[in-house]
Length: 64
Image: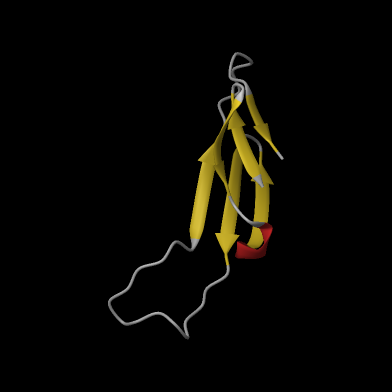
């Protein structure tokens, strides 16, 4: 999944890392697979990412 802003890519997220994707109005929530087998007690990992897209038509954002 590639997030673009304007003519350039902002960042990419492999679909294999995404457990669930929820779209609500102007917000996209990505939940990631959690791998508890390789994580140590003190490690941190990203489990959810929320992106807000303003309703302003001037913002040129494309979610693929």
